[in-house]
Image (cartoon, rainbow, N blue to C red; front, side, top):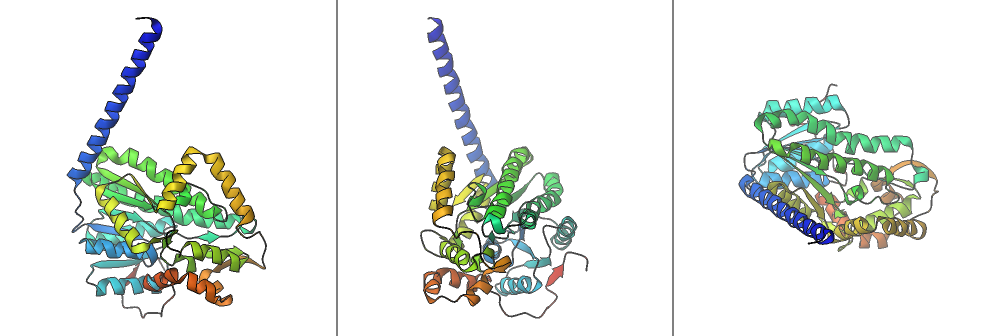
Length: 367
């Protein structure tokens, strides 16, 4: 056997060894998931941003699995409305006011949940904000706000619950990121930057905590029909920015039913999956970007140039979607976004009546 043949044989053996190792690791991961089981009953789950949209649906889904649930949010009226609906359906739920971008508030909230339930078995980092508009209208403060909520708002709760999970050598952490954390989309730059940071944190966290019995799952949803486009903040040419966002977040095929998304997310949590990308368009986009990132960027540049609104407009401050909808009524847009509008009503994204405080929603922060 000459040198070339020996080298080829070595490469072949190395390839077989790597394939065998990969298969073994895959088998161990599957066995681990089977051993871990798919039961969540009597677990205590903390959900950030749990007062509306996907967070509210995840709270509802987890209570149906037998979990005791703590939800947090910044708006006391929204939080109380969610608490009342969940409790009315028989859920064991604790609601705590908290801004997840403030470390002190997060630590006090986690302490309050521990005091009430005794422990936290599951952490779902869900809180988020959406800022829509061209870069010319964005300010440094917009990026800071996005990172406060969607990066530090993931890091702070995670670090706060980790000591008890490590002590028990068990626990589940799930972070809702976005396809925007895998492919940066124009007119969503603060959002994309924060979501990229959250993806990096979540993926690295899984690798470091695996040996300690703690599973970390990263969820990257595409567009979902939660009605969140009404609570997004817009800059620039408001009517046009709101229109493209509301269509994307409402039309079937492009967007996913939020209740179906919540079921899939809980399934991934129970199985201890490393990652799940939701919606077929999002999976295809992530796959294409992985193979041809330069081509993807060039295509998105064309979308920015020919499809999305040009910079400009009379407003330089952020305006919520609900205000834009009232300011620029459009029967045609209303018909096309009917599914998203219905979702907003059902999942508390449209502002509702102010509810009287009943003592149910507690403060996790100092006055």
